[in-house]
Structures are given as C-alpha cells and as structure tokens.
Amino acid sequence: MKRFLSSFLASLLALIVFFLICFFLLLGIVGGLTMTTKKVSVESGSWLVMDLSKPLLEQELQNPLLVIAGKGQTTIMGLHDVVRAIHQAAHDQRIAGIYLKLGETPNGFATAEEIRNALEDFKHQSHKPIYAYGDIASQRAYYMASVADSIFLNPQGVFEFRGFAVRLAFLKGLLDKLEIKPQIFYQGKYKSATEPFRLTRMSEANRIQTTAFLQDFYRHFLNGIALARNLDTAALARYAAQGVIQQPVDAVKLHLIDGVKYDDQMQETLKRAVQLGEDERLHTITISNYWKAIADSVHGQGAGQPAIALIYAQGEIIDGSAENQPGDQVIAADDYIKWIREVRRDDRVKAIVFRVNSPGGSALAADKIWRELYLARKQKPVVVSMGDYAASGGYYISCMADSIFIQPNTLTGSIGVFTIIPNLQDFFQHKLGVSFDGVKTAPLADMGTIDQPLTDVEKKWIQNQIDTVYATFCQRVAQGRHMPVALVDSLAQGRVWSGLAAVQNGLADRIGGLDDALQCAASMSHLKTYRLEEYPPVKNPIQKIIESFNEELTTSRLKATLGNYYPLLQQWSELKSAMGTPQARLPFWIFLP
Image (cartoon, rainbow, N blue to C red):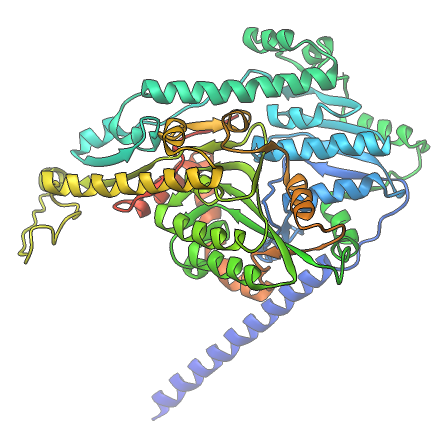
C-alpha cells in the first residue's frame, strides 16, 4: 500500500508540475503576443525601412512560436499588406522616405515586380526619396532597388550581376543503380515534371520552353534596370556575359550603383537627407511595424460598404482539408470550396478576386475548385491575379475567370497531366531479398502495387485516365478563355509560359498586380468604395501554436541540416505523396536566381 501511495503521489506531483509549466509557458506566449501587438507609434521624419531579405507570403502568417524562440516578430507579412503600406506611406507626412536594405531575397520575381511597382508609384506620387544599401545585392534585390534615387553598397560587399540560369536535377542514374523502374504516364510533350525520373538530361522540348521563358524574364529584368538607371540594355547584357563586375567599385564605375559606404556612413547619409544634425537621432520604422500602426485605418476603409472577397490560394493543390496537413501553404480543395461557396451565396459580396500563387498539384482537387469558381462566376464577377506561379493546376483553377491579371515574370501555363507508379520488384528482390505473393478476384484488383510491373492492359488503362484528364483540362481552358479546343491544345502540351507570352497567346488578359485586379473587380461590380473580406480566415494564436509546434521543430532542423537542398526534399516529398494519382503541376526542379 505504501508503494502504491508513493507512486500515486509522485505521479500526481509530476502532473501538477507539468500543468504549471504549461500554464506559465502559455502566459509567456500571451505576454509576448501582447507586447508585439501593442500600439506602434510613427514619429515624424521617420524612414520606412524595408528589408528585402525577408520572406513574404500572399497572406500574412501568424507564427507565435517565434516569440518563444526570442525572434521578436510573430508574423510573416503578406505581399498585399506590404504594397498597401508603401502606398499609405506616400501620403503620410510622418514618413520622410523609404530605406531599402539589400540582401539575398527569398521571394520570386513576380513578387519582386509587385514591390518594385509599388516603390515606383511611391516615388512618383510622393516625391520622397528612396535609398538602398546593403552588404549583398542579389539580382532580385537589385532589380527592386533599381528604382531608388541612390543605391550604395558596402565597399567589401557583393554585387551579383551574372545573368539567369536554371539547373535541373536528374535521378534516373540513381534509380537505375537501385533497380527502381518508374512507370511514367503523361500527356503533353513539354510536360517535364517526370523528366528527372526518365531522362539523364533535359529533353529538347523542355530546353526550348525553359530557354523561352528564361529569356523573357531576363529581357524584362534588363529593360527595367536600363530604364530606371538610364543605361543601355545591350551594355547591361554585356556586363553580365563578360563577368566584368567583380567588386562593388566596378558597379559604381558602370553606374549600376551610386557609391560604396560602410553602415555608419550610410546612417549619416540618411540623416543629411532629412536635415538632421550629427548628434540628432535618426528615426526609423520597419514596414511591419508601420503596417501595425496603420492597419486598422486601412482595414476600416469602406466599412459598411459592399464587399469584394479576396481569396488567397498559395501552395500545392491537395485533396481534402488542410486540417491535418503540416504547414499553412496548401490549397486544400474542401476548404476552398467552403469559402468560395460562402462568398458566392453572400449578397453583400459583389465580386471575387482570386489570388493564385501555385505550381499545381492534384488534378481532381483542381477540378473541384474550378467547379465552385465556375458557379460563382455565374452570379458575380470573378477576377484572377497571378503571383510567382500560376501553372498547371494553378492555371486550371484560374482559367474560368472573367479576367486574368499576370506579371511579366509569372510562370504560367503548363497545361498537362502526369502520374508515376514505381516498380520496385527488382529493388526488393536483388537489394533487400524481399519477395511478394498473393491472390486476387479480378485481373486489375492489385493494379498499381509497387512490388510488380504493370501489365500492358494496366498501362493502357492508366494512360487512358491521363488522356481523359488532359482532355478535360483543355476543355476547361477553352470554355474559360473562349478559344477553340485545338488552339488550347497547341498552347498546352504541358508548356510553361512567361506572363508576357501568356498575354500574347491569350492565356491571360492583362499585365498587372493584385491592386489592378481589385480595381477591375470593383469596376465590373460598379463599386466606387468597398471593403475587403479576406480568405482563408486568420487562425487565432493559440490554435496556431498547437498546429505549428511540431512543424516548427521538424522543418527548422531539416533546413539547418540540408541548407539549399531543403527545397529538393520538399519536392521529393510532394512527388512521393502524388504517386498513382493524376497530377497537374509544374516541373519540380526549377530554381531561378
């Protein structure tokens, strides 16, 4: 009895201690959240500081775990919030100018385009200065900063200007050594998502399409810099081709930047620009804090007015709900159907703007989302705004819109379908010494099992399924874009297009960003003022903590271990989960500078 009582009391004490720890941990988190969400003031004469090395998402992401990690910020800003903050700053007398901090930017070229356009508008509307400075100027960061009045770099820093490249990883040799035979089915001669598993180098069709969109991106990049810096496009191309810019001073000589400075010298430059004395304090405010200070007034605009629903669709397209999926950046069919149906039936919502930033995913999930948007378009305008990617399944869910806005450097198209079913029979037998046997009641009952090759009948059955999905995809595009199916098929074949090419060939309507799409939706709905209703709904902090704790631990460890190879692991995981089901997604292994 004594032993039982001592064990019971010890367990009870441990349980009490555990709950006390959880209680105080929760208090700490809530306290941290309270501190980070307290009212932010904007001092007169402040420089609005924008760090171009910070990641951006389509919609603001709350991450309370960063408080525990001691990183201060609890959010990753949404791109549209950044653009709105820049627009507000143009008319805010407290903001003296914008200070861009250069670095390695993790954001895509279409995202960079939206920011750059907002900075250009700020410059022309406000006549306030924009200064840029950093230790490293990556090509995307420099492209955004090229609209600045003055650009400076650390004398010992790095200025990247070497042109664009795409590198693809091919796994066929590895699979051959392991005696793994990927059984691949696809429709579209340009559908290169399966090439890493069936080839050892790029197919000629893939080389053609990749060269085309990369050259479109590069021309747009050079033209933008040439116009902003009053330089010659051909000269810029020659600098990159010959590798003549090795040190920051080389960039100064060629007028790509305005000078070299150390950080303390840059701070003095900012002071002089706003006529501060040497001993006076320079006022700065980060763009995230500035957004906190003005968000309520911006969100309050149009209060009580009819609404436009802004639905963000970022990430891989998946079946089911995101409830049990790690991470926030997925487009789960069941969730999006619910939200689209909700705004479709809401008479207060007069239009829908669908912001797509997705390389695709499940063809079935894409078709289900397409159907709900198709029904919505019968009742109210639907306008699509495309981000860095809106390709394959990302294009599938966009093609029914009344109007499609796209950036010149968006990747789109890739209208094609594929699936992979690996045959691991030789791997199991020869490498592991494992064999399989069984019984079945019908010839196709065990079709798709990975321990044996597909029969000719099974291969034909699966290819017919892929052909049917591809034909449906083309029909959806033909219906939405008012094109003959034959023309869609000629533009499809899995080919990836730049935004510029997509407007030229009719897959998109106009070059423009999210604000342009919103203005279009308002015009189609005859709205002079409106409020925004944004989806997905923002999760409360406690729910976010519970959902993201394990994910934060796992991904941070993997990123620390794999470094630049972490995206490859992500892509392999996505492919593994997609085996055996028709997929409408971009080629996997594309990395742009």
